[in-house]
Image (cartoon, rainbow, N blue to C red; front, side):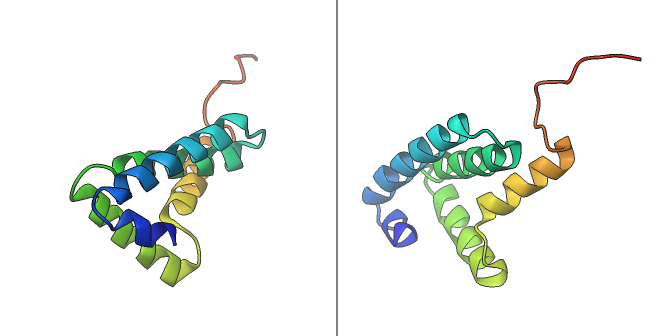
Length: 97
């Protein structure tokens, strides 16, 4: 349903903005780094989706990703970030010997 709303000019920006805010809040409140990365990646994609033409491309990639893998592109991106950062995603563990 959300993808359908995002494809309607005008309403798409409202839906993307609300989704970006929701995912950003969920990401900020998440305790698990993998979950946080997933929500923040989805928030970034939703925010970028409000840009004309970019939103169409993101919507197409997201739909294709869901059809092929069963996961949204933001979920896959969040998983990739978690893999690259070693479960942490920033915040350093300090130095040591």
